[in-house]
Image (cartoon, rainbow, N blue to C red; front, side):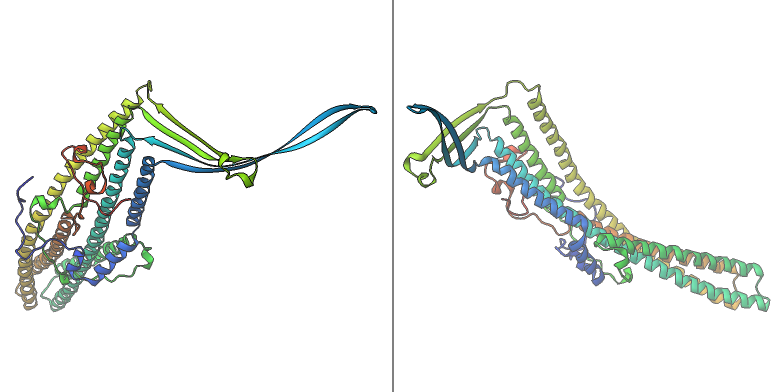
Length: 470
């Protein structure tokens, strides 16, 4: 475990993300979009449904630990006809006799598998750990959707800002074109000067539809994220300049692992896989089945509950594998290989968590510095462009100088917007890398399920759980 992150730390006022960390950006529009996504997003709804499926699987797996009891009741009626031949002084004759046979039975059957080798317990433990995984996975999906909504919204704002820059520069370029045309009419400018400025104006005008298209594409993309058709989504883009950028504290790496739902999910999968190994190993041993039945049986319904009407039976059976063609051994090896796969995934998720934080911290630090420098570049370019236009009006500079100043200003302003967007996205990635305000709930899997011990998991992993699991 690294002692600290390599990237430069945030300011002293920075703190861990809160559960509603996105409100720190100060956008009501963003708050509304995220709330809609949390309520209506299809991926989140599917993840919640997977939690319910996993809970149901825990109940199914736990049923094998309990006896099964079923009730029975039958009513049977038979009619038996017999023929009797007799002789008399007048001759022989045949007599037909009919008798009814009625039987009433009321009983119960019970069966129970004695879990000597804890195979059934291990299956239930695996299902319980999978249910915990589904909860952590749902939190991971939610965090991903929330950050995707925010990044899509930020990108739309950036295109809106770039569109504003392009429109402002187009207006300035058109004013300069009017000045050059006036000079042409006065004989102090050439047709080439006019053509060069017209080419600049045309290029800036042609860039505007592309920026509008990109902005609209981002707004349309918000529809699927908030669970609505894009035709019903009406959003007016704003500007990145009015958003706050609250810094967050990365803390120390050891704190990070308790705040990443994906790491916790990987741990839960390890517990489930290890329990599956135990179940696969227990399958090599004999299983013992106890069965019993009891009830009441009589020929008359009104005497069914008489003392003499009771019947009962009890049996025990043992089943042991002798030859299965290698199925049990294959199942065990498969379970072990699956555990090793998940162990590698778990280790990767831990290292990936550190990597995500380092990337976001480094990017945010350098992009913050770059934005400061780019602001200064824009101020300088704005001053140069103003001077060039003033001198052009006075006739002291040629059109080439003005064109260079205008092009530099437009480029620097457009780059500033893109750098600002990159800084916001880096901050957003840092919120996501730190778990988005998620923290491990109190308690562990070991507390929830008797019989699940640290020895069952290589390295003694003890997992937090999102909620009680029946």
